[in-house]
Image (cartoon, rainbow, N blue to C red; front, side):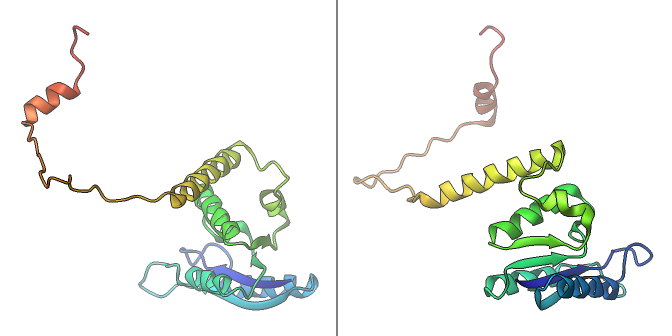
Length: 174
């Protein structure tokens, strides 16, 4: 299987594994499992700057090129410390047609489509699936801008703010 690795250093230099250590973990895992490591994309800290996502954007470029079948992570936590962001990024990668693999055995349940990752993650996945379905449906529709009537007349009715507010609020007698 052709894989691309993704490494992200922690925003806090004293926390987490270094980028080098994460890359080595990915390399060892690829060799042990017979994967062809095509590239490793990395988000690295630069002194005085916020940790960006340039490496992740590079990863998306490698995926878009069709050169890989899977993304290899040194752990799902490398995507984000936030569970919702992790699920959004996992969903995004899967919708791009790649499998997501982790070197961390603790992530097996999270990445197995048949496993139960817990109620929070199941809710997030359900919402993302429905958002995806809605987006796909909306992309099938054609929207035309409103046209001008054949006679060319356009009527605009200006409503005063106090009248609009009165119409928007239900009256107590109803």
